Image (tube, rainbow, N blue to C red; front, side, top):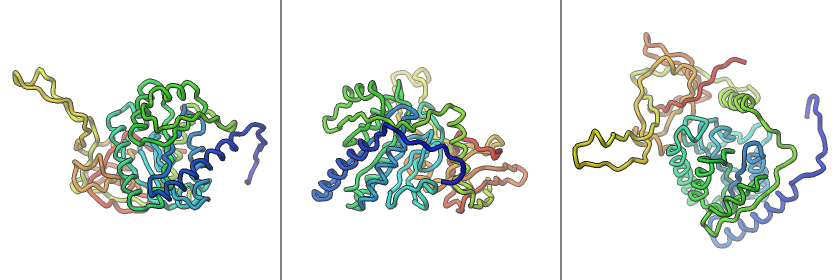
Length: 351
């Protein structure tokens, strides 16, 4: 380490407990490889600032050093550690996660949400969890070694009220082998009572004494740094370039809950079922798009925008109606398609 550092030696550390749980998971991986089944699916849950992401990193790195190749899944759209804020993502871990470089040049699977809080569109959040799960399972079906290595899943820190219900839904979708609850006795008890599957083990683990609580400003700064690193690199050694989007050549969409007509407007005797789908709605270019983070989809048609993963992100810097052009910052690629998803996330490059 360089620079001034106030290092200390912790008297109480949970690392021995984390290590013991890793060896239990490794036994399950060995059994899965022998039986040609799916390895352990681990979900880490807890309130904000309990060290969930750090524990996931530790478990991933321990597994890789045992020649495993687990898939790391991050369902935290507010502080996503794989991609940028506003998405759900999964990445195949083939080497230890670097302290500075993170996942390096890995190509993650990214499902678009477009905001930093699930309550902005709960149905979309749960649908994207299912879409990400299906994509990860396809990856496992193609590689028996990845399948035996299993999954390690990080979750968001909203564990009260509706957030708890989203957590239960995520557990039902992924059917984890074990749920590690970090430093939250009440949450552990509630999950033990409410998770109906008898195959899911709920295990309470202590958090590290080095975990630091962050206020809202610190979280906003972290998200801004994530966006900056996406375009400029962790060491600010990347040089993004400006791309020009012709307004007549691209189509902008926002994902909104399917419209439900009031029953009073329907003909007498006619009823309609409540739709649970999220539909992409076309949006005309407007000046408020300046500074928005937008997602370039691999989808070939609008109706596939929700299910299809994301190719990458652009940052709109200028909207010019006179020239019918939109200038956007791109990290290193030309948009592979003409279907663009708008987020609610803005990034203004002011230090």
